[in-house]
Length: 338
Image (cartoon, rainbow, N blue to C red; front, side, top):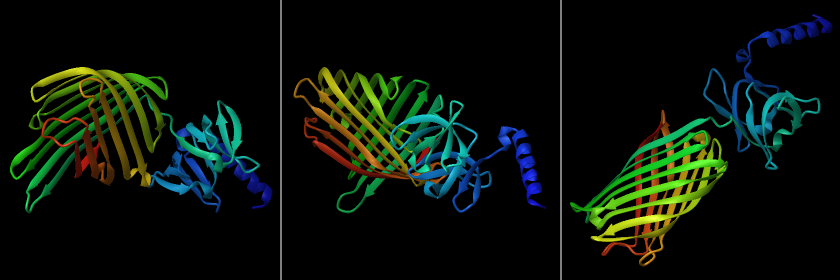
């Protein structure tokens, strides 16, 4: 076939492709070595572009090895200079730069200037965990600690709900040393995302440590510092009211609350780091300060079942009589994400 005939055949082929339904046309990564990978481009993060072919699981390729990207869906794109836009990737320009279509108008950008790209956040989004953790020691002292933990983060449009539950039972030489029940709920109204306001409430009891009950409610304001496919970081502060009953003595008054939540996925989401801390300052009586932190890792085993290891640290400046100021626990267990 001579050159003009080849060009005519190619033009006819491209024309026929344009007549096909959009769903038939897969996204494409054109690599610098000439390879073409087809599938669904899902995100760009940490210098990698992720694509899910129809014949394999999602995998990542180095953005530095990519010549151009073409996809059917719009993505939320963040550039290295911090600017953000919603765009569709439309191949390469004559100058060799990536074409982005923004509101129907094409623009160009160097691929190395892309910091992040992901599908727009859905109106509904939820992530939940349930874990069973346990530690057993034997020898001069026999001890056992069992901790059940569950949490959820649910987003419905501009409304977000966060809740977590901790049930902990400790025993040493057959004597129960801890029976903690802790429940927290928080409501966020994303009035000007990433800023939000809302309310939070906490209930805790540990009768073995003479904490008959402690509850607090507060109005809060906060900000999401990170919220993408791989990272979530938010903090909030608030003022509210608390009541507690320790060893039969009831006290109540104003409190200040600080909370931070951080999550970061690695290895394509198989490994997750998390850190949560809450500080409550009581403006009454002896101005007790209560700190609770939970820091650890989750590693996916199979089908959203994961192994977890975490370090929990609780501290009070004025604990119940005969109770220690701090409590450090290393817990290992298994859980599920759903």
